[in-house]
Length: 235
Image (cartoon, rainbow, N blue to C red; front, side, top):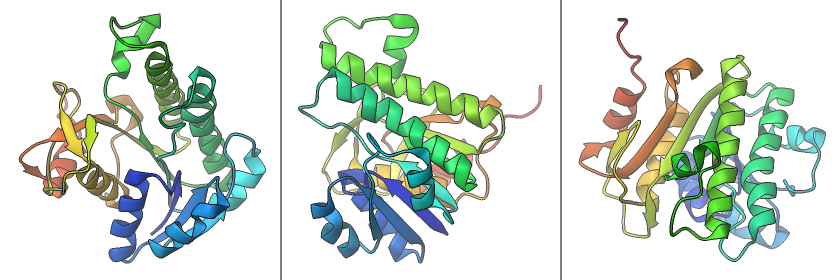
């Protein structure tokens, strides 16, 4: 399997790359900063410099062409303002979808965020600052756009919403459900769930709502992913 990872120098993305490469998969790591190429290549990926805030569809499509799946693990990051939450966390995710469609890539996995439902229908959650609210709105908008694309058959889609991220060593077990109470999860275990979603034979149809929340838990990752991707029984 060939996987193109956007935001390949990020903390979850680097863990994911190492897992995929160790399993025999090929990774194309999309990065904005050429200074990060050596790190990404040390993880086993082929680094491609492309700025998702300024590139066009054709350039990004060229970078992901031949991949079996794309992963959006990029983010504006801490310290960025409201504007970049939109240009990266929403617009870059949508650009990657445009590029995936143009290049004929069949699967898209989006790393989203726990809590996006709190801003649905324009809500402003109490006690949440303007920048984080903008981040949640950008993530929700990206989810909604990608779900619409998947519903039209553009690609298979999985959306993963991790809880509060930690650098604790992964346990190999998680809680993975459509909806979960707020909690934490290690970046190691998030990466393991992403790898399992990428390797799954098929994802849920878009109409089944392929949006999953992940927290620390007791179910082995592979079992949790397999269970979560089992279609609901017919009524």
